[in-house]
Length: 244
Image (tube, rainbow, N blue to C red; front, top):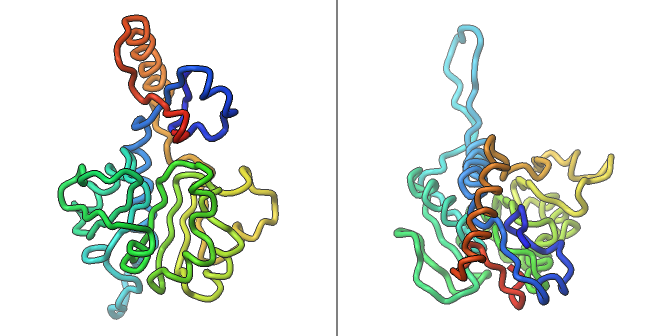
């Protein structure tokens, strides 16, 4: 069986236990990394585009991404793609990952735990798999540890964030902004507070879309089918114990 997404959290556990399951891990990395950079720039750069002459210069509001620190929670192929683009913009990148391995991207510092990352990050990107261990990973306790004025970005699953705690942190100013491609539930009902909050930007779970996405997924499935028939290692094989 093959999942069209990188995550398999919607699959019943018995499917993972009884069948060989592969996923589309890595196929969405380039387009999601572009979404993240766009979100970072949108929040940081507030540039006064004009359509007529101005009498005098007014300094724009906002700041620079260069010299800021991006913390990435979950350092798989998506996190690595984001890191490479961020480093090119002179952003310092730190990350935490489940496995204790050297950083696969030169220039990225791996930190020992989430609190260490939250304490130093001006922006925090969630790109970890949705598992029982990551449910409400960003809760009230975690938000109390963030660097004041942090920008929270989530392209993983809505379940990683306690949205009630996020609302309190936004209202209290601990979190400056939240850019969310995923929420709980999906789609959000009309009138949900996330739609109206001035510090929140939402996209409808489309950060992984690209013009040739369906074809690339089909190509991955075909490759794995041929590998499966030939007894070769599969690409994007899901670990039924880890759940991704």
